[in-house]
Length: 444
Image (cartoon, rainbow, N blue to C red; front, side):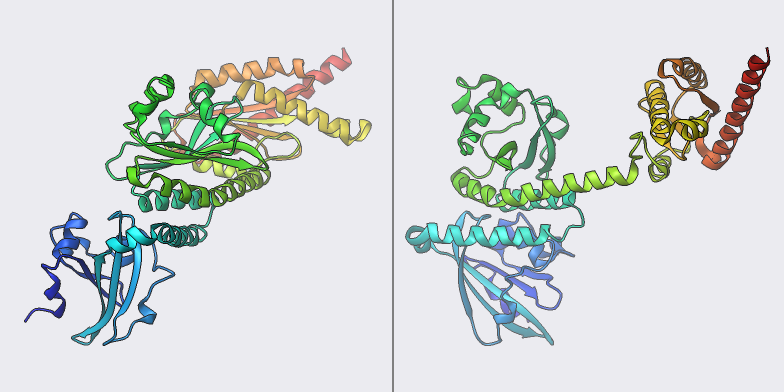
């Protein structure tokens, strides 16, 4: 004997059954299988109802299971983005073989669509936004929150791509975050430092607090040829973009590509509602970035500190060549004792500038009061030797004397401690030679 819900197999309505305790989908009728492009419910093995039906990573906050009881039917009505239509929904609970299941039947509601679409749009939009924010706010970092909310918006709007662009210091636009639907080519790497003239017309509208809706990209072919070409290259035929403001200043925009054409206004409203959360997360990201910078940066020299050094070392591959340059600022104690610590700080700053001018692009750190370090992965032995010679020549331009000990290793598998120890030993040999030479000059 089949299960009771198999009665719905050929019904012209959507039906699904969920295990109340596990949230597993145990049944979809033929119409529902067709909607999800499935051959059988077994293809959803391991998937939860909230993942499949609502694009959520955890049970929906508005789940109606607590309101259900066996033998009673709970009616509801909502707008479905997937079907682009209004549904009248009937839910109940049945017990089969000792387990309880929620059985749902969804019928298309044309009357609701004609009579009160605006009310339902608003209610559904508000519920979708709240659900997305609830999920995103649980993310441990602002970056992850932004990734989650873009994915949620993209899936909720059935778009192909969602993204954030931020203005850079040169006035161009950088694509900083991106989500793409399955089968869609990512474009983030191709959309860095987009010239200002590409989106100039958008920014003019942004300054008037207006958003962008392009129903058909062919409509801008003549008026915005540069923008048109870039959008066509990405296979964009429609889009919605809203501005992002921080303290009254436009800092960029975010949007969706290729949402269903009939729902562009709906998509625009959703993006506008979410814009405040996007801005808040960007602010949080900037704050985290500043705190990380402070925690990994020596405040006097702006070189990395020991925490930054440990982090940098973790990223070096065991197969990389590595040059280690250990530096000691000669005469710092004497300067501090005779001219004061402000003069000593200036000497440290000059030493850091000298090191940066030669080894910029590598890992540079201040690991002690008068000790600086350069770590140079993937450098050749000859290049390291040349840079050390340049550093010694460069000291005079910065009015500083630095004792230098350098070590080169063909691979990093030996570990950092042995290399640091050897470089430190060679630095002290260089320092001793400097003082012996200075003493000889003094006597002559």
